[in-house]
Image (cartoon, rainbow, N blue to C red):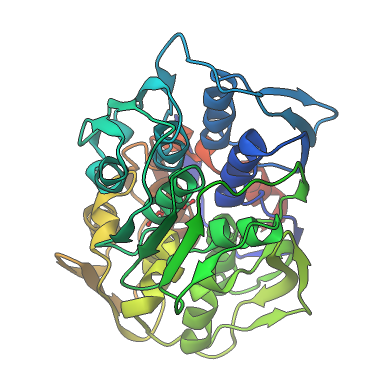
Length: 428
Ligand code: S3P
């Protein structure tokens, strides 16, 4: 599918962002292992999360939509052996987190994915699961897991700050013998830990980079109203920041500190962003906020070190922001971008250069010179939703028309992206 973007003057109005993808995946997976029914309100109806629900249903979970926005989930008393492969579609979170649940049960399962997911590294989760006693074959999908209900707890040192590795290992640890610990080089998103704590499962902690669980912990069904996704609204936040007449009110946004690196960047760049008082939903802080285009010139910024996992999915659109900031923006320590839905370092740099920006790439990041007047062009998003949306934002601020191929991928995380854009547009 092709998306055509014409330049506009700004974005104005109020929006409720699509619900958080990471939280929806986890809500479904936790509901699948709870003792009792759960009610999930406002889950993200994107293809990635639908893949998670469909895979869980193949192993005995049942669900019923009570209305357009609420699903009641009944876990299987005993998970059943699926009769077919589990298709995780484009979703790395589905495959990696689900692996932990499958590995800790007496199931023999093959998980497959689309062309993009089939290239992504799975050794990173296979390794801890093998150490715990599961049989895992396939360093890239298809991933074949022979699970066991007799896994042993491990003390795992993860080589990358990845919530998917951490969550996979902890989920397996919930049914393993003894304690399972994960240490990561810097803190990745901690939704799994927060949700476990909110559900009454004691979390073992040793500093902020080392967490664990004790096998055998159980919890009851729950109700969860999924707040908005900062990784999705980031596209609108950046658009508001770079389009001159913008003022955007954002409602019900999840502002978990392990995900809010974009606020640090906005502060450094001098972009106004006003946050209301926070409330809490199942351990997750939630707030409303206002983002507006600054009167002053925007300043370049640096993304490195522990900030990287706090905004990893936002880097493509923050690179677009960098083209509109004064000076050289440097992004480093972000090698993980090369193994996301696409090689995001190459695709971002290539697309921005095609639009007239000066970008240098490194193995673990890039340097971007700004400000530059971008030129509309043809972009191949390579079926990566965040590449498609980042270049749509670039196109809004460009001269002439931008055509984005591979835009059907946007439906994995933000099905209403285009309609929300049109609704909030101030015509140019
Ligand atoms: C996710 C974690 C991140 C992120 C992905 C979703 C999660 O991946 O990029 O979109 O829900 O745990 P890593 O933790 O592997 O970096």
